[in-house]
Amino acid sequence: GENVEQHPSTLSVQEGDSAVIKCTYSDSASNYFPWYKQELGKRPQLIIDIRSNVGEKKDQRIAVTLNKTAKHFSLHITETQPEDSAVYFCAGVERGGKLIFGQGTELSVKP
Amino acid sequence: EAGVTQSPTHLIKTRGQQVTLRCSPISGHTSVYWYQQALGLGLQFLLWYDEGEERNRGNFPPRFSGRQFPNYSSELNVNALELEDSALYLCASSLWGVTAGRDYNEQFFGPGTRLTVL
Image 1 (cartoon, rainbow over the protein chains, first blue to last red):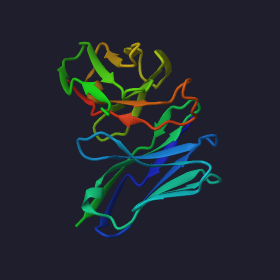
Image 2: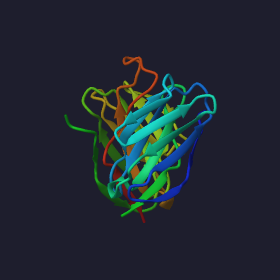
Image 3: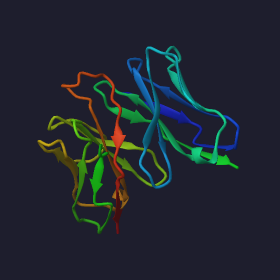
Image 4: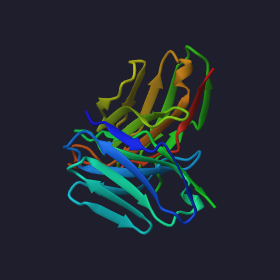
């Protein structure tokens, strides 16, 4: 089945700096890669996703890149703000539609 | 449009007891997923129901079970509770399924049920 590895587990940046979180996956047939943000005490919420037929997708300060050959994808947050502080999860889709999540990255943006 | 709802919000049980958690998906969604999120850990897949049938289950013992009703709401049952079952149990719903014909799914999460086992 699919296995998703996520790094780093914690990330601390200064407000205004960029943050990058990386994930690798094992199943070359995976074709959908969502990113979820979970603020303290709240539910995970989808912030951006990418399908395997595109290499990059951007939504304002957030972008995701996908390298199918290397089987890795990354989340890029530019001009970070304190409200970006949260745990971020990447995921891959196992055959049949089951999402497999990475271990999570705790992002801390210091003002 | 209402989001995914879960009940109860919090629950305290003792070892050996049984618990039932409930989830109502977004209207029109046929798939319901259950996840366990223990403190400091990630999202561990528990169960997936679609169109009333169990489609997949994660690496959890048989004392974790559930079902999906004709209105697509779902229950998660945990028997013989153990201390390590203490966690946030999250339910998510999506449109994926045989009827949707998709090979990917956007899952929407509920607020979760915080279970504490003493």
